[in-house]
Length: 270
Ligand code: NAP
Image 1 (spheres, rainbow, N blue to C red):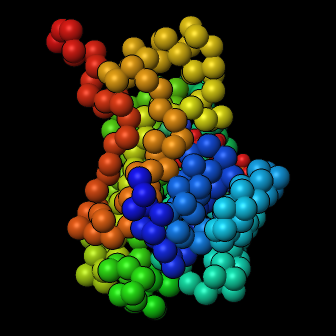
Image 2: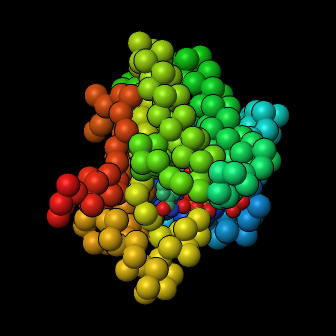
């Protein structure tokens, strides 16, 4: 799409967990659309460096910042570093997340706290920091009609219960209400807050579910469109949702799931 080249020109974006999988695809899509991108990584600086090199080779602007998003002091330091290098923030994509799966009766408090700490508290901490800057700076009409945009990477599991993944499903269900409540509170200040809820996307988080033909065939029974998603499917939607082309969307969750939330079991019965 040729128009995407300038969709985000002049805007400063931060993508958490931006050095792999869906986060990496979002980083690349935002950079392609003209944004300067801060790539937050946790434990893989080499991945972040490779992406930086590619963006710079393409005449884009990017920096990499290490931080654990579940830690308030590290999040604040990450935003300070971003402001030092980019001056401000226009787009936050809360993406960093993980799973610590266990049957419910065996789930430890540590497994629960780790997932809630990163997937939910981490999103809160980053959203709060970004929103403070959006409110302080206000709208710059030559940059965007919004004072700022926050995108939460949720999951189909914000609505589909998931046995054996209670901590993960609870974190994603929590994101839904956090996103909508923040959107309701900040919309009068021209801040847009939305979620993208991916279905099954080929990344490391779910490799066992698609990396063999048998596993992929089983996964496809849950996807009416009969295709497992690619990270770029999410990157493209994120770039559009961060742009003024989606200016009237606020407090919404966009499911990007090949129909996974259409209850495919009911297609032939029910
Ligand atoms: P992934 O490749 O494993 O990416 C997860 C990212 O989160 C990694 O870059 C990781 O960084 C980062 N991360 C983990 N803990 C962190 C922390 N404490 N602080 C900062 N960053 C941290 O998996 P993915 O599939 O792209 O997942 C990205 C998001 O999409 C997650 O929120 C996930 O729940 C969501 N999602 C994925 C799917 C799917 O099918 N793949 C479906 C629905 C939703 P390091 O590697 O540097 O540690």
